[in-house]
Image (tube, rainbow, N blue to C red):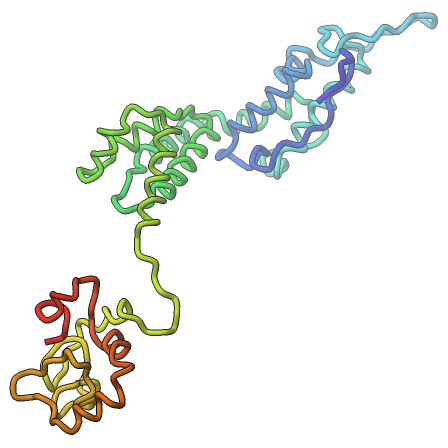
Length: 313
C-alpha cells in the first residue's frame, strides 16, 4: 500500500467491487475497509478529525523545512493538505454514487467520512436485526441438496455481516442442525460434533455418493427394457393385459397375433391360430427378445418370476 518511508502517502486504493459503498446493505464492510486503510497508513487521526487543518504561520526566509512523519500531530499546512486529500480521495473513489449521499470531492476526509456515517449508522441497527432474522429463518427443507442449502445460508450470513453483524460459523451450524426434521436426525447423531466446515464437506460428499448410486438414464434413441417401464400403465383393450396396446397384442385377434416368442402364453380362449404362430416363429423369432423388451415391462425381477409378476397377463 505504501513504501517503507514513514513520510510516504498511501496509494490511491480501489477496494474490491463488493467492498465499494453502494448503500446500507454493505455499509459496514466499506466502513471497516476505510478504517483499516486509514489506520495502517497512519492517517486515522485525519479520518476522525483529531488532526485538523493547522493555521498558516509566517516563516522566516532562512528557515529550514523539516518533513514530519505521516502520522505527526503537527504537520505543516502543506503536509496536512496533501495527506488529507489523499485519504479523502480513497474514500471518494470507493463510493459508487457519492453525490446521492451528499458527498462531494472538495470535502475534507473527516467531513466526507462523517456524511455517510450519519446517513447509515442510525439505521444500521434495525437493518442488522432484520438480516440476522433472515439467517435464523433459513431452515433446511427435506430433499434440498445440501450444497444448495449451505450456499443459500452462507449468502444470508455474508449479507448480515456486510451490514455490521458478526454471524459466526457456530451460529449457522446451529441454525442448520436445529432445523432438521425427524428423517434427518442421523446427521445430528453421527455428525453433531463436527465443525461447520467439516459438517458441510461431509454432507456434500454424501449427496454426491447418493447421486452416483442412482441409475443412469439411457439417452440412446434405441428402446430398451428400462424404457419400457413407462408402458406399465397401458392396458390392452383386447386381452386386458398390461404393457401393450391392441395393435401389438400377440393374442388371437390382436394386431400382432402369433408373433409372440415361444414362452408366450395367451389368455385362455385367445390362443393364436396355428398358422400365424408358425409364421411368426419362422419370420420373427430372431427379433422376439427385442420386441418383448420394447413392448413389455420386465423391470429387474428374476426370470423365474416373469409369469407371475412382469409379463402383461
